[in-house]
Structure formats: C-alpha cells, structure tokens
Amino acid sequence: MNQTLLSNAHQLATRSLAWLYATHDQGHGVLPPEDSNVDLDLSNPDNAYKPIGECALAGSLVLRESVAGPTDRERARALLDFGWQQLRQGDLLYERQFRHILISDPLEMYGHFHRSGYRHAALEDLLHSLDGLRSTHAVEAMANRQLAVVNARSVVGLESKPDWDALAATTWLGARPEPWAIDWITGYNVTHTVFHMTDWGAVPDRLPVPLQEYLAEWLPVWVDIWQETGQWDLMGELLIVDACLPESVCDPDSLAQLVAVQHPDGLLPRDLDPIDEDPGKAFKENEHTAVVGVLAGTLTLARTLR
Amino acid sequence: MPFADSPQREYAAATEWAAGRALDALTGAEGAALPAADVPEPQALLAADRVLGPDVFAPALLTGRPTPPEVAARAAEAFVLFPADWSGVHAWRDRATAELLARAGHPVAAESPPLPPDPGEHGWQRWSVLMAQLCCLALPTLDSPVHQRAREHPLALARGATRAMLRRDHRTATRLVRWLAWLQSVGTPLALELRPLLRQLALTGDGTARTALDLAVAERLAAA
Image 1 (cartoon, rainbow over the protein chains, first blue to last red):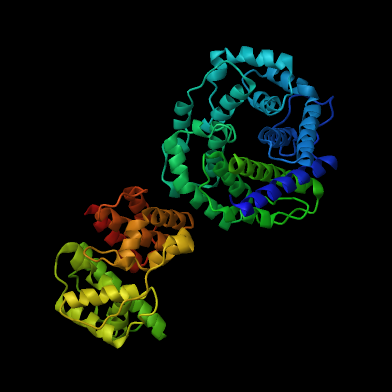
Image 2 (cartoon, rainbow over the protein chains, first blue to last red; image 1 turned 90 degrees about the horizontal axis):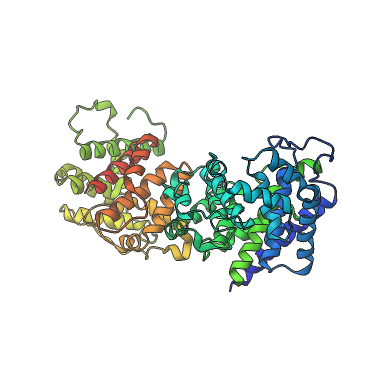
C-alpha cells in the first residue's frame, strides 16, 4: 500500500473539507431570504443553490465512505445540515419540483441528502409519481446529464430501472473516441459520465469493461495535460474518475501535485489565476474545486483501503 | 547559398532543402528542374545529410527504387566529415545510418550506443519524446534495441502521440505517429487508429519539409 498516496489523499480531503466548513461558518454559501421568489435563477453565477448541492454531495460521500476521522465526519454532517436548513428541510426542493415537473435539479439535489438519511415525504411521493410518467423519462438532455438524473433516481430508490450500458453508449466516452480530440469541456463530460455511471465509485463495475479499459489507456494522458496547464479543477475531477475505477491507472504524483498547490487554509485553486482578495469572490470561484478536493481525497482513500 | 547569414541557419536551411528532396523522391515528385541558386553549398549539404541520417535512404527503403549513387556517396562523405559521438542514446541514429551506408557499399566505422531507456524508468512522457527524436529509425528493414523498445511499449508511444496532439506539438506528434505506423507495419497491435491521426496531421503540420517527410514516411508505412 502506498503510504505517501494515502497521506496525500487524507491531507487533500481533510484540508478541503476544513476550508468548506470555515467559509460556510463565515457566512458564505447562503441562499436569498426565505420570502424571496422560490423560482431560483440558476443561471445567476452568484446563486448559492448549486454550491449547496455540491457541498451536500461532498458531505454525503465523506459519510458514505467511512474513511474520515470524527472531526471530518462532524464537518461533513454540519455541511449537510446547513444545506438542508437552507433548503427549508426540503420544502424548497418540493415546491420547485411541484411547479416544474420536468426539471431534474430538485431530484438530483435531494439525492445527495437522501444518501445521508435526510427525508422529505411529500417530495418522495412526488418523485415516485413523476417517475411513472413517460414525459419525465423523455426529457431531452446531454447524455451525461441523463446519467445524473438516472443515478439520482437510483439513489432515491425510484422504481424505474435504467439500461446503464445503453445510456453509457450514448455519451462521448461511450464512443471510445480519438483520445487526442478531447477538449476542456468534453473533459468534464467524461468525468461526469463516470461519476454517475459508478455512483461516485460505489459501483465501479457498472461502467462497461470496454470503457474501463479505454480510461486505463487515456486517463493518464488527460491528467498529464491538465496538470501541465494548471487546470486543477478538471485535473482533480479526472483523479476522482481514477478513484471510481476498480484499480488506479494514474501516477500517484498527480495527487501530490494537488496537495502541493493547496493553500495552508485548505483553499484549492481552480486554476493558475490569482485568488481574488475579496473572500466572497474567492469562495464562489473556488468552492467547486474544494468539493473536488474532498471527493478526490476521500474516494482515493476509500478505494485504496477497500 | 544566398539566404543564410550564419552557419546554423545555413545548415538548417540546407536540411530543409534535403528533406524536401527526400520527400520528392518518396512521393514521386522528383525530376522538376531546380534553380541552381536554391541548391545549398556543398558543406551545408553534407551537414544536412548528416542531420537527416537514415532518412537519406528512406525513399529507397519505402519505394524499392535504389538510392542514387551520388546521394549515397555524399552521405558517406558527410558521415566521415562529421564524426559520430557514440556515447549518447541519440547515436542510434548514427548506428542506423552506418548500417544503411554499408548496405549501399560505403562501410564506415560504427560502435554500439548505450542501451535505449525504458518508459518504466523515465515515464512514458519523457520516453516518448526521446523516441520522437529517434523516429528516423522507423524505417522498413531496420531493427535495433530501440525498435525492440518500441515493440515492447506501443501504448507508451500512443500516449506520447496523444499528449503531443493535445499540446499542439504537431512535430512531435508526427514523429511518434511515424513510430506507430512502423509498429503497425511489423504487425504490432495499436491502441490508436492511425488513419484519423494521419488525416489530422496532414491538415495541421508545422509547415516544414522535415515534418512533411516524417508524415509521408508514416503514411507509406501505414499503407504497407
């Protein structure tokens, strides 16, 4: 067992989680007041709705994997409690899903909380009902987004049974395309395909073997490329992909590189740009990468110790 | 030669000229009358032959047409005029040149360079760059420990080619694709499809005759 890798993975996850905890404690990541319109403007980059879901995902996987110490588990639970409180114990999700039956973000958001034991009975009834409609299953979306919805349905325990292999085949990754023809945004499409196909590493074999083999060949190249260009957010997501595979295929030094660029307070920069001096902007610009740090560290530890 | 203002530039220009002539010979475009003013000075031409190394014989090895005697004689003269340094891995280029000169009736003294590195020691990134620098060995009938390394590590070469493509380093990509084409020609299965790569590189080449020659060699090997 590679002790340096374990140490780096632990440090990356713990410090990223500490930064998320501290920044939330300082008041960042809060939704508008309760009396504002429940129709959140998700196109607004300043909106806290999406970050709440991302932090809930990070917290839920820290609790799921049971490789974190007591302090980290408390912080993970605190992030989930904070998010659940911001969502008014799920009421906001219910209202949003009730008004817009074809959108998927309430379901996906609820999945993160559901994984950690949070429940909203009316929302679950609604989701079960919507799962029975042909309409909700026919909504047009990018292939990896379809996988996000399908995995959320699975996490919440809805009845529909997807054909995972058929869904995987519709993604960019599923075509096993020329690996030299990838670009930055397609890199994110690949990572999310793997995240949802494997439920964030919980079921690695749900990813078809040919795609596992394809990633074993080319994932190291993509990690190398985005490491060289300092795209820490995408590189971190690619290392999460590595942790979602049955066995690691990447150089352990790549994780060490993420640890090396992490700031002493745990901030993990998303790229090579300077960190904004305004704490609010620094939070908004780097919150996603902190979540990536938590997941990359946690899932690497979990797979290595499994 | 009127266009050079330093020996380095003059030799670089002569190398481009010589690569262009090799490319013409390979693609069957030779025979066009060349303005005398464009022909490099003799010393620069010898230096160019030395840089091209085994690729002086690439047209013959790929088309079956014999190397013109004056071309082989000039390559032999260049080999003597600019002696090889046998201490480095790059001397495998000279080793191959010496072998091809001997086949052409111009035996020259040659030694054995150090064993080529392995991607296990250097990582596939650094190793593939080194192999790109040795791509002029990727020719029919040549074999050596460098070729053996290539046969043992087709994925490392394919990763190197992919990395070079993504870094927009089309020269290195072309050189590694030449190795991949050579591997395919000797029956080694590849992790990358050659045809789309060759098509893309034909569109994105770096505009030099040397890279065009590498690409033409790769296309010939891929079609073999």
